Amino acid sequence: MEEQSRPEVKAKIFAIAMMMATAIALLGSTASFASCTAKDDHPAGQYQQATFIPQAPDYNDAAMWVTADGDTDDKGADIFYVVSTWEEDWDQIVNGQIVKCHYADVWNPEHRGRMSDLEINKVAAYMSPGNRFYAPFYRHTTMEAWMTQNEDTIMDRTRLSMGDVCAAFDHFQAHRDTSRPLIIAGFSQGGLTVVELLKHIDDETYSQLAAAYVLGYKVTNADMAQCNHIRPAEGETDTGVTICYNTVKDVKYVIPVISASDICINPVNWQTDATPATLHDTITVAVAPSHHVLVVSGYSGSEYAAYKGFLNVGDIHSCEPWLYSECLAKNINVRAKEWRKLHQPTVTRIQERQRSEGQVFDSLPKSSRWDRYLGMTAAMTQNLSPRPSP
Image (cartoon, rainbow, N blue to C red; front, side, top):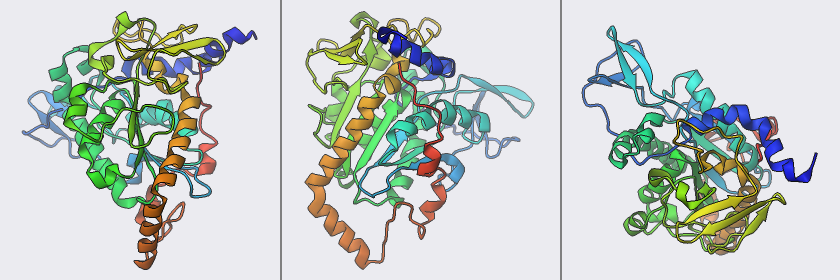
């Protein structure tokens, strides 16, 4: 096999599974709750006029989480990861009437399966080694919202989704060992939730943040003006910062509702200027400072099929968690270590207080009810599907 073909040939292994990612890995801004409700045969299902709202997740239920503990020496980070979009609008029968649903149903095993098997498990395979990984299922809004390319529609639809993610994060935060560095990451619609979570968290939680990773979504000046927790990363080792990038073949392919960002950093060389970097020997990656996106050459992204003339048509939206996976895995560990160096005196005080109060956090805390949610051990992580690469 010729070296030049390595990125695209290896990615073919993942192409079939990611066909749907192309279609449905997108993002939005925040979605309205139904006010008029009626019961149907779906447990706690709700509908408003002709729109069905699935039952809310219960984050005390282990079925609502994918977790992996790869931190064998208790020196890693806690990673909270938010999955992208994996559903299109679907029909539900309510009182004999067929109504539309604009959200994933977290109680539907097929919906959970797409989120976990086609994305979460594969991300966990490269993020969890050396760390503890947690990813909630949530009622992400469907692809149709993004197809409108209307910010108001996206904002309205995703409010419900963000409510779920905030509830999941608060549950996660209440049960984790807060002396450990925190990583928040998400792809596409999950990237949106990272931006909104940074607005949601308080200053104490922000002080625990090693880094936030917004993969395939935008961070705007308005976001940063609204929230002092969003500080753009300037290099490879700074902490408490937000990493953001979107990949295109040319700046003309920027999608306003997704990638019209005001910040960008190159995850290959961790530069924010136009300095090019080489990935996998044949791919050149450089920031376009005028548009705050990554422009790649030497890589076609052909394994990600175009979706209805909207995605992967010059942008390479579906590649974001996979093309740079090795860079991301390494950088998560770098920033977590830097956070520990900076915060070690505080960490020591917290740990001493926890011990005096009888709180003991092991890699898998057997005495804590959070242990019930750790459905995937480090050994199980090794059995995940191979990490996709270009």
